[in-house]
Every structure is written in C-alpha cells, then in structure tokens.
Length: 248
Image (cartoon, rainbow, N blue to C red; front, side, top):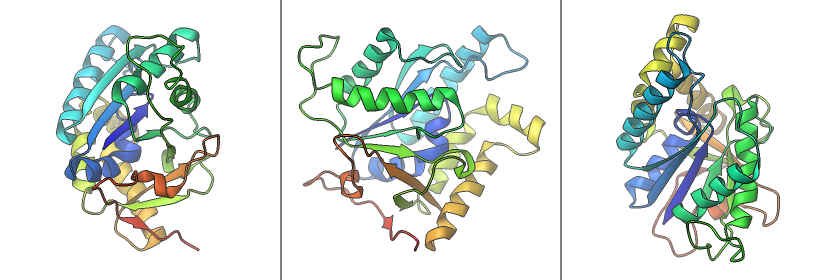
C-alpha cells in the first residue's frame, strides 16, 4: 500500500496526520510526505534563504523518524498559488508517489498556503490519471481517494468524518515534531509552549471526543470521485487502522 501526505510547510503533516501515517508505516505501507513550500518565512532571526535550508534539513530528519520518503517542491512560503507550473508539480508529486490514498490540508484552513494545498491536491489527483498530460512521470491508473486533515485547534474545519486512534503512535508523532527545532524554539519564545505541546493538546481533545487518549480526524473529500471512510484502506490491503466510532 502507498500513502501520500501533502503539506504546505515543514511540520504541517506532522501536526495533523503523523500518528495515522505511523500506523500505515508499521504495517509495511510506503508513505511519502510532500512539502510544497520551502518554509522560508518561518524565522524572525535568520534570512529566508538560511531558514529554507534549515527547515528542509528538519523535514528530512522528521521523515526519517517515520521511515517516510520526503518530496520537497520548494515553492515560496506564503506565495503558493495554483499556477500551471505549480499544478504540474503537484501532478508529478501524485504520479511519483502513486498513492492508494492522499491526505492534504482542509479547504477551510486558516492559512492561505494550506487552503491552496487542498485545491492542488483535489486537482492533481484527477489530472495525474490523464495520459494526454505529459510530465516527468507516467500517468496513474486511478484517482486516489482524498482525505482532508484537521485544522489548527480544529478551527474552520467543520465536523470531521473520521477519527483514528493514535494512542499507540503518539510517540512517533511527537518525535517527528521534535525534529523541527527552529519552529519549536521560536514558538516557545513567543507562546511559552512548543508544537509538541500543541499537538498533545489537539490529539487529546480529538481523542476525548471518541473515548481514547489521542486521535486524529479527517474529512472525506466530497468532490468527484467522492471519498468515504472505507477508502482509508484499499480493498485487499493487509493494513488495519484503529478507526473510532464517530461521536454522536
């Protein structure tokens, strides 16, 4: 089984779906983490060029914790737009990773780069199958189901469709986020707590909704072809996810 998680910035995938990705990896799935911008605006002390170098190294270390492949497309942070060039890059991300399932940001997320990833993922999963669109990789043979990840503190994401129990993989999620030293240090100075603290808070909140210690949530993409909770694992795959009953 092959899984693709598309995030706008280094650490986004870690924040919103790393626990679920760890379940896939533990059962032999190949996971690709695609970061669509270079994260160059993530420091108030380093230059944008220096910041981009630091953040790519951190993303590589985090992917290594998970045992995932990292794809780094390098669009400017804060200026991710659905141009022909960027859309083609997104198509190639899908074609190269050849996923059975895609995770991406929620279209109602607070950050414009996040919202753009949702749009790009939705378009790329369709275009990746079109054989008339020639690119660096061959067309896929199917349209992969798309799941939108949670939003920061659940704001703007509406009501999720799927809760995954990540109590057993929370340690991996925390370890991945801990590799983003520059971001954790900066947030600790500003907020008094880092992104590891934040993800613990959010995962505990989502877990409380369904009676487990920690959880991650997802929303099924409604656009054609519509995604359902059953698409988290393709038929015949030897992978099992601890999906929780939705709260009533």
